[in-house]
Every structure is written in C-alpha cells, then in structure tokens.
Image (cartoon, rainbow over all chains, first blue to last red; front, side, top):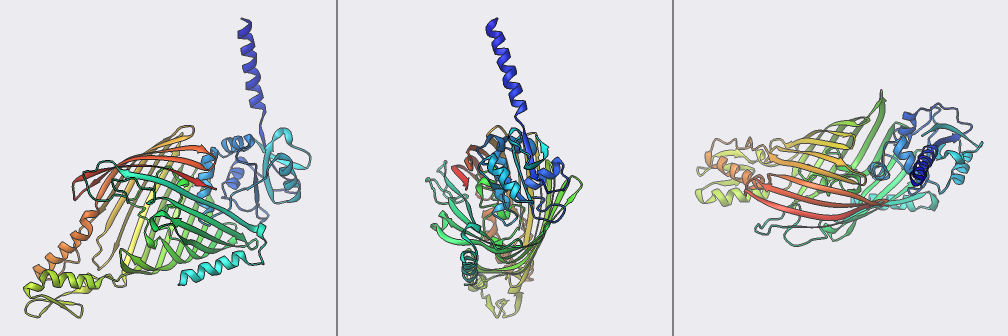
Length: 138
Length: 390
C-alpha cells in the first residue's frame, strides 16, 4: 500500500513538473508588433520574414539537442526536430530562406534579443527576465 | 564555359575581401546509398542498379556556401559531387538572391528548374521520406539545372499561404549522347498550403532542339535504302525520287516543348498521402507525349516513417509524326518511335522506411518491384542508406 502511495505521489509530481516546464517566446522590449500563435509559427517556418514595421525578422533558436527546442517545435510548430529540419532543408538549399540562427543557452538568447530589436527567440519560462518581452507561452 | 565563369564569379564574390568570413554560412547535404536487384534472372538495369551491390549510383555530397552581402542581397553556391559521375565536383547551384520585399525574392544565375513540384529538392534525400523521389517523375536529368532568372512571391490567404514561382532561362548541354538545347524556357507554378493540406499546379514551355537528325537520316537509309528510299536535304525520297516526307516532322528543331503537372499532399494525424501527375511532349517531333504519376501513402511513427509508393511511367504512342502518304516511311517512323519509347514504360510498387536516428541523420531502407511493360518482367530492388544534412 505504501509502495502504491509512493508511486502515485511520484507520478503526480512528475506529471505536474512536466506541465509546469513551459516555453516562453520572447522579443525585444522595444518591439511593439502584435503576435498570435499562427504568426509565431509562420515566422519559424520562414513564411513571414518581416515584422509589421518592415524590419527583417532575426529568428533565433536554441540548439537542436536542447529540451526547450524540441518542446517548442512540437507544441508551437507541430513538428518534431527531424520534421523541422527536413522542412527547412527544402528552403535552405533552394534559395527560399535561411533557417533560424542557433544560440547556445538561455542567457545568450536573452542577450541576443536585448541587443537586437528585430529578433525573436524562445527560452524556458523559468529563465525569463525583465530584459525581454514575452509574447506567448507553450 | 558559361557556367564555369558564372560559378567562378560567384565563388569570387563569396570569398571576396568585402565579405567578412563570419558572414559566410556553410551547410550541406548528402546521401550514401547502396543497392542491388535481388532477382538475377534479368539483364537490364533499373534505377541505375544491377545484380551487384553498388554504392556509387545514388551517393552524393554537397556543400553550400552562402554569403550575406547585405540585407537585400546574398550569394550562394552549392558544390555537389555525385558517385554516378565519379564524385566530380560540379557547381550545382550558383546564384544571387535579391529580396525585393519580404514576400518577393528574385534569383539570378544557375538553379534547379521546378519542372515538377519537388524538382529543386530532388537531390536532398533528407528532405523527404523515400530513398529517392519517385523516378517516374523525378528522372534526374542534366537539364534540371538551368541558367536564368527566377521570381518567387508568397502571400497569405486566410489561414493558408500561397507561393507563386516563375522562371525564365535556357539550357544547353548533352542528353543521352546527343546535343540538347532548351531556349526561352518559361515556367510558372502555384503552391497553396493550408495547415495539413497542400496543392500544386505548374506549367512550363520551351523551344527544344535535339541534335540527332543524323541518326534519323542514317536509320531511314539503313532500313529503307535497300528498297530505293533516300534522304536528301531534309526530305525523304521514295524509289521514284519523289519527296514523300519532310524529316522536320521527326526532328526536334526549335519545336515547342510543353510540361504540365499537378499534385497534392496531405499530412494529417500522422497519415501522409502524396500524389503527383505530369505530362510533357515536344510538338512536331519524334518525341511522344510522356505521362507519369505516383501516389504514396505513409504513416509516421515516433522516429520512423513507412511509405508505400506506386508509380507509373507511360507514353501516349499517338504516332502523329507518322504522317507520310508512303506506308513504308510510316512503318519506319512507327518502328523507330517504338524502339525509342517502348522499353521505357514501367510501373513500380515500393515500400520505403525512414528512421531518424540522430540530429540531421536519417536511415533509409527500400524494397521496390519494378514491372517493365514491354519485357513483361519484374525486377526487385533493395536499397539501404543514410541521408544527412549539416
């Protein structure tokens, strides 16, 4: 019985932990553009290349191996890492677009977004600071 | 020579001191694939394989160097080495891109012409779930790459998006040992995508010339010469010396080539359904209308995709060029047409497996049965390989 209780508690804990770990999509605080989930998806799939004010979007991503990357692609873009890479290989090698630029961790992502008013990125929500603006969570 | 100059110029532009090394982005793709025909009671090759394991036929490596010159312009070169051509390095793509607006891009230089929906990505094995895109449509011809201009425009319609592509250019080279030229190539296509569904339609026209007149003249003289027929100044003469056929009807000499194609893709709840159909012809020439299609049904598991592919390659055999009043001439033309096109017709059914083993690495496995219509025989092809991007 005790064992059952422990297992149940563990499962609950794991389940709640998983649901808490979400992803925040972030932009520069000076960026006043409006966003919805579809716009974010279009930006990451290279279908929107500029913000409403005409500035070219600088799209950033964490590394493929980062758990945040996989979670973001799966929930925001409905694509696994390999589907995402297959999709982009069609554009990148035919002159139709440039895949998102990789940065190596959340701190670098925040710095890059802070330094460039036309950039967009994503990090684990727990890493968000006042230096960036959150436009969506997944 | 033209393409070498273009490639050298672009390479120079990319590597010029004006561009900082950090602005040049290197990436690439490739495939290592082996395969063989497992039933050895047949002699011909299918898809470039015979009954001995071959790793050269479909293996390739490509390196892309892309330089951002400024916000509007970038220069790109793709160097590709194919096993089929002894890994001789070729500037497959070499172009300048100009971003006219966020929605419109102009491309100048050397690029893959979208004859069909995926023509420009057919070399990138990683981009699709098959061992190779169905060969009924994606033959991998020399003239897939042209020099010219391409314009691309994308826009949104409700929840979907639509992309227009137009190209103008020319090709000059060799196909099957004969000089081949395509001039005034005009291509236009439209692609609409809505979440899980997309549909495509495209047309292409060009003036085509094939430098094989001598082989038709020689063929006619060899077949009908003993009966007193001859070819003189582009006219076929009967034994009485009367002109009975204008050989221009057989030659492809600045004649109009026309392609059209359509297709759709469904990617819904892990089910994948793709189909494409295309037809093409060169009017007033020996070329018969070719009609090709494939349909594929797949299912995506966690890291694997299994696809079943049916494809068909056929020719119309309308024999419109057999228009002489002389039955012997017509018999020669019908015979020649048959000898060119009859052996090509086939259909094939295959199972393809893609397994995403690691970031940028996909293993592929294939079993395909190819049924040749004329020989009335089947070949079983097995291939295995790795497709990668970096």
